[in-house]
Every structure is written in C-alpha cells, then in structure tokens.
Image (tube, rainbow, N blue to C red; front, side, top):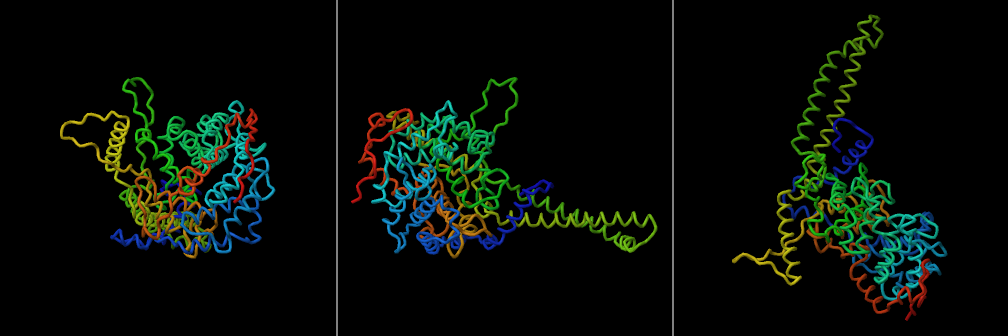
Length: 567
C-alpha cells in the first residue's frame, strides 16, 4: 500500500500482507514465456475433491458451533464438487443428502440451518441450491407451495421499510432480498417473482442501500460491503433482469467502487475500503462483474456533463475504471531512492555524534555534552526510522515488480476504449437487425464484426491470486496464506475462479484441461446444467396462481402442498 509517508494500522497490515505474498509470486519473476507461467498455475483438483469428500459424513465435534449452518455446509460441499465435475463420495448417496435436507424442512415452509430449527431465508437458499445441485429425487423433496408461502410471509411492505425479513420477526437486509429471489428463481416461481418484488418494494430498498462510495451496504445507511453488493445486484437481476439493475442503481459509481476493491499486488478482492483481500471475495466481488456485463457499455459509463452548464458548480466526474492502485514504477523508484538518500544522510550525521553520545551516556557532567548526547540520540532514532522506511521502500519495489498486475497487466486504456467501441458498434448493429431495421451502411462497408466485450476487471490477476495464494496443495482453499482451509472459502474461491474463467472477455489461466471449472449461473451460483434441469422439472409441475391458492395479504398460499411423491 502506498501510504504517502503516513503509516497507519491499515497500511502496516497491508504492507505485512504484501510482504507475506512476495514468495508466492517471486517464483514467476523473470519468466518471459507466458506459456511457461501457465505451467506453474495448476488447480490441485484431486486434492480438493478429497478434502470436500471428507466433509460429507460425520464431522468432528469442532463443527458444533456451525450447528445452525448445516444446510450451508451441504451446499458448500456439493456445489464445489459440481464445479470440479466430481461425484459424491462412495459412502454418501444422493438419498442420504435428500433425507438430511428433508429433516431441515419446516412444516410451514422454508428450511432451518439444521433439523427442527427455525425457518430462515439463508439456510432455505442453501438447502434449495443443494437440492438443485444434487438433482433427481432431491427436486421432488421440496414443498414448493410451502416455500412460496414462506417467501411471501417474509416480505416487508414498503411503508414499513421494504425488503425481506430473514425469519419470522427477524432483521431485514440485502441477504434476505437475494436469498428470497434466488429461491423463487431456482424453484421456477417466475410468475411469483414480480409479486414478491412488489410486496417488498425490492427496487426501492436496494436503491436505498447504495452508498456514496458506489457499493451497497446490508441496510440503508450501512458501509458498502462486497457480500451485500453481490446480493443487491443479483436480487435486481433475478427480479427484473439487467433493465431493472440499470434503472435502480448508479451503475458507473458501483463499477468504480468494485474495480478499486481489486488489489494490484495481490490480484484478489477485499470486501470493504481499506481492508485486506480475502479469497471469498473472489466471488462476492468478482461475481458481480458477470452481472454488470449483461448491461450495455453505455450503462457502465457516467452520463456526459450537459453542454449548457455555465454557472454550475464543478462536479467530480468519475474517471474510466482503472484496475489497481499501485503508483507508476518510476514514481515508486524515485520515492525509494529519496528514502534511501535520507537514511544515508541521517546515518552519517548520527555516526559523527556517536562518540559524544557515548561519553555523555557514561556520565559526563558537562551540560553541553548532555545536550549533544540528546541530539545524537535523536539523530540515531531518526536514522533507525529512515532505515526502516528505506527497507519498506525496497519491499514495496519488490512487490510492484512481482505484483499480480505486473505479471498479468490490465489492458492499456486506449486499447480498452477501442475494444469497447468495437463491441458497442456490434451490439447496436445486432440489435437493429433483430428489430427488423438494419441500418444503412455506406457502399462497400462491412457490418461491425462480432467482438467480445471488454473485461471489467483483471480476471487473469484474480485467477493468479486464487491459484497461487488461496489453494493449499494438500486440498482445500483459504482466505489468504497463513489461514487454514475451510469449506466456506473452498466454495467461494472455486466459485470466484469459475466466474473469472467464464466471464465475458476472460480466459482460463493455467492448463485449460486441468483448471477449467463448470460454468455456474452468475445470479444464483448453481452450476448451469443443474439449474436448467431443475427449472425444466418445475416448469412441468406448475403451482396454482397465488389467487387460486388463497394467498391473502399476509402471504398464506397453500395450494397443492407437500413434496412430490418420491419414486
């Protein structure tokens, strides 16, 4: 972190992390051949599968603190295995998972985190996503009518603040908004999503959660946070597609905040301003970009300043999103030399006074000797601080040399602008053709060729961070080096890796056959083919409309309740 000569607790912890990451990237320093770099970046697929298999079964007593998160553990494990294209362990069957999930299903709808626990929107999302991932009989185990009733009961009317409660009498936040809309989508309740959004005042609530920074807080007035930002953006996409997203949020400011959450040295994302990167935000932040990529390029840019603006106060215009926050190499080099020169000057002055200091400290009585001793001590103290600053500058230079953004630089701004213009021209032409009104082109002019959208963040640097710093060679993924692996971080590091591999304008880092993960739906984070199969299953088994099911203002909606017959 470039601290402008004013060290803080934040900058010290950031610099300590960067120093810790140096060995992970230094083995790539000096490798000129891109293909050779890719050979160093292999996903330890078999070891991760073995680690995940160890969690599907009897867990140790240390997991007792996660008793209310057992449906989450199932989701983290089965989703990670699905991303890796791996089966369940031999001693655990799909029927075992279905039986456990059914034991967590509440009679009045929804799921608790464990058997006989209170129905809660978060474990309801986890249980439904796990069932959709397992597929087959698991799809029929869900009482969709009761779940729909539960979702409706969780709506908070706009006049009471809007959004959703996480459980009966519980708090409301963007987690609740997201999990409610994601569950409705996975269960094929498309006809009900509009009612859910209307009864909860969803768009207005999400809009109120966007902060001056651009990201979203969990509730109106809260600090912008990566997890809540994903929840708010995905909830809007699920409720009304990219059009609702563009109409609800200040998208350019959101994008500006997001790209500045990616660490230029680390390549990963932090969750909040001035916080350390964490592997889980590879998904919670990195997963927002595929959702924003659904928008037209013009929606991602700040609106132009009106021409008739004479006399208006000057308004800050956000610059085009730039990835990373490291100063230019020349600036860093100049700063380092300045610090080292200051250190050498102070050291020379301190050494000149050292004899006087020694004499005074041994008890010399003369006042002038004591004064000189104090001056010498001050010089020595300054020299020590200058030495520390010089070493810090040297470390910063090393971090810049082997940073993720130096190994995999982001596109040049001019190249990025040209790519964006080419993509926008193709999108506009294709839209006109689809509308039956192809534009007239000058004679001899070819239509704009298909063009990939420009990347919205440095996807290669993100993959580098996950593969080099987050995965443990023995299996499992973690927050960052020095932290233990766990199922949560394994799930969301892999989810972030999959999102970075499949995002528009991205490419797979490392050996493609070894590293490529399955594509997950960007809004609900369930593997695509699993979600498609589930929605097709439910489309063939529609629930009666809410009115026919007797849904009142309170949201009670029964209808043809109960799980499907298990065959």
